[in-house]
Length: 168
Image (cartoon, rainbow, N blue to C red):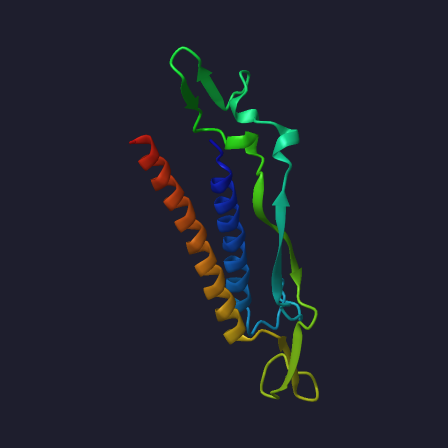
């Protein structure tokens, strides 16, 4: 029995959570014109890139089920498999899925507006603000939320199918 589907769904959920956290940070800093230390400096919008995880299962072998594996023990007398639930399957190595490649700052991170009443306005009355579009950020948040939900549903459906198969 392969547990790849749980690796894939779990990795997707983790990646989408990072995406949602990044979008939330962008929304929270939509009007930030100061650095955390109080100095002048505009918050730069952050974006997330993902990359696919591929691993050749044939070359790696099935480490879960080897006789000396700490993750699983096979009893040949009964044919039962005991999996240690306190340890990640596949020795903590994902065999497929997605992972966060990097969180990077947007290239077009600053917009300038005219607001002479703003405390951080320059001598001509212009203020640098983060180039964050709230509508785009909300669309990204909804998209990441739905992708997270889809991955959770996949894991739950596979779990239900495995339970049904054991009851046959």
